[in-house]
Length: 165
Image (cartoon, rainbow, N blue to C red; front, side, top):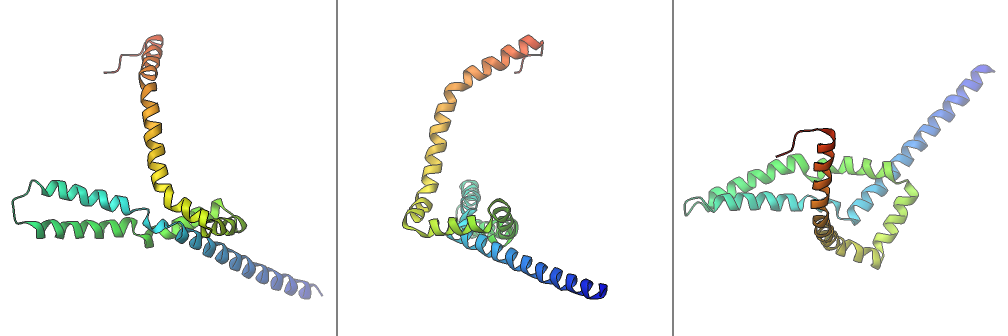
């Protein structure tokens, strides 16, 4: 009889672990679906643009007629970036990030939202809103810098620390 209980326990354990694996696969699939909707594969596009711009600025100092050299090095830079931050490199970590922060039900709700017209509008407007929000914050922050610097100087004086250059 004890052997029968051991066998039942083993069967239940195996069934439970396969269900857990299926749940994890489903959870990961939902995270991938959300990331696709959110165009996460385009997150590094600005990085590529910045690198291309660096090469173009540097190339502006080069002799005339060397466009092929610029293009060759830009292609090599793109290949290096692909190796480091290409979507195939980022995707597993991004899926893990989202599955560890959102349960499957939450991911399904996010997917539903981002598939809606309002969700699509949010995705479309978010880069511009983020950039403008950063500009607003930066502008407001600049007004606090002199006061914060004075507080740092006052604290340094009170603590008897040497003055910062």
